[in-house]
Image 1 (cartoon, one colour):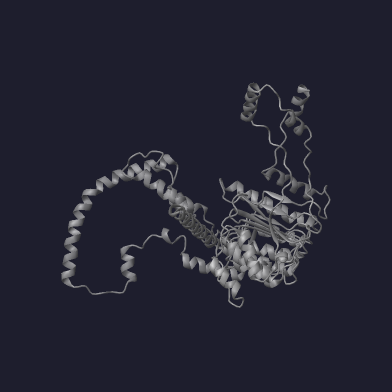
Image 2 (image 1 turned 30 degrees about the vertical axis):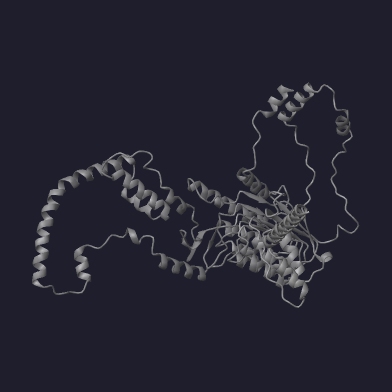
Length: 565
């Protein structure tokens, strides 16, 4: 009896130990998810007690649902987080390794599997649609895309379609989105945003370090505060505002956000404003925003109300334009802060002239004696080095003559940007150092100097040309894609655009390898001009030669095809 009682006691203790271990595991899991059992029990017991602050886990679905519940939303009112549906893709070709393995298995087992063949024959073709329950299609959902569906922390894109995003919901997004490390795209369509909601978006979107693309299409906002999304703190590289009913009021603010005399957006690369209500006033404002902006590469004003005045202004900004009084004042300030580029080239005045300019000073006789002794010693050394200097000078002059350069050409090269000046200085030092020949490795520009070539130069510091008592500078040559299709531009506006493209081509021919290529693609279809118009045809021919995606037909291609046939 004693042995039986002891065995029962041991079993009881083992069961208690197991329960304790399981309890610890559950508590640990709950702690990892952001809560504890004791805290939840206390919160359930006391409804008036404020809940503990929630720590985001980086899992968007869990964080979003928890914040919705903390904002007193019912379970049926919380939008579901689902994976974005994708169209069915074609079946992948069979792998050769799997084929070989199947063939080897078939050779080992001669009896064919008739059931599998029948299932393959009866397989239905893929569908292009997905059926859902009644009214499930109209319930608000948040669609996401992930790098790896097995890892919920790898959300890269978020899509919201057809339901209003109010201040409560944007406050929840403000807490969830900055924690998602790989979030790079946010796409909103028909979400009915208010001015306060847009301001809230603009306040926390810079906290999402990897968020580069923002799409807000089909969303009307009477106040049109879209320029807040591309402020100085914005990290967005692509912004789409299609079909938002943007008028000249919003376009003027967007133009100021692109650039002013003292500030400029430094990250936005693509801006899509197609399908709005922008007229010439808005187009002129956006063109003024391109005067000092050297980052934007693609601009779309398709399907608006832009006519000849807006097209002329865009052509002027793309070719060259005179500086305003405010820009001239700012240019002088920048030059005074930076220093004149020719300041380093000015030679110092001779000693006699310096003595004339300086006020007279009386020196002591002891000081004069010391200086005389030093001069005597230094003069002896200088006389000994004269012969060596003469020989080295002769060698240097021969080298420069052989190279085809001159000292005047070097002065002109130094007046260029700092990157070119550093390159010339490096080549001079390699040629003249100790009279030795240098290898090709030594002549290369150091890697540390290469980023200076890629730095954007302030347009106000570019070379100016004085005409008609005005200072003219080259226009914007960073913009490579301009879409003006389906507007109201006539042949008059086409002439202004043609002159701009021709001017950019002449600048390209003068520079051997320019960093800014200018307009490469321009869409002009659907405007108030005939396709047979001379200016329109010439502009299309010039643009076709610059289009990087255009491939000219191969000569003799038809003969080869006929022979092959």
